[in-house]
Image (cartoon, rainbow, N blue to C red; front, side, top):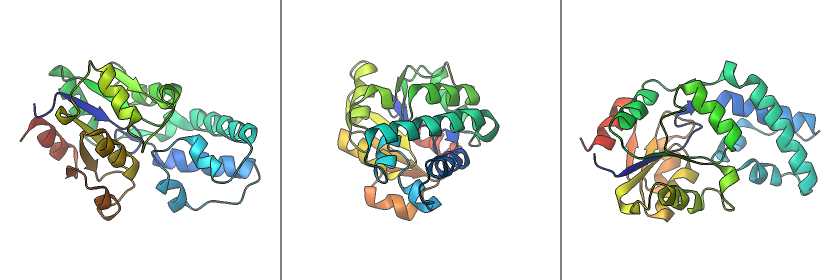
Length: 216
């Protein structure tokens, strides 16, 4: 293996949940009588927390908390019928697990939703650690979640780890933490959008990801 540990983002990287996320945001803004928000604006914030996303439009912490509850209720109610895996990506994770490579999920989603997503993918038993929004005080793009994952995996040297993600926030967090970064191009972000974050590698599909992680 090229790396001593592999960290994965969840939404847009392992789990194709983009349609569900957009539906949940639109439902929440409508339910709380806020103006509609364009899909492009919502997608630009992927990888950050719900608190940060809703904080752009609402100042009252109590109202933000209510919006988060509205979002989560809608999201979890529709979750299993709307999410799916990306072709071949779960198989890459399972192959890494079979080789006993230390694995972690690093996500801005809360633990309940993270566990639900991993169950839908059949990956519930594949990860040694989960670092979720509940676990940190500073979410991506801050490096704290990546640092915590490395610490929980036994103190892996950042230079020997890689963070696989789809968003600019993933790449920025990984770069700030000193790990390698692999930007996947099957999520909602284009190569042009990701290039300013200077990923260590771009990967177009599961086969290319497996080759990169394996040192091929």
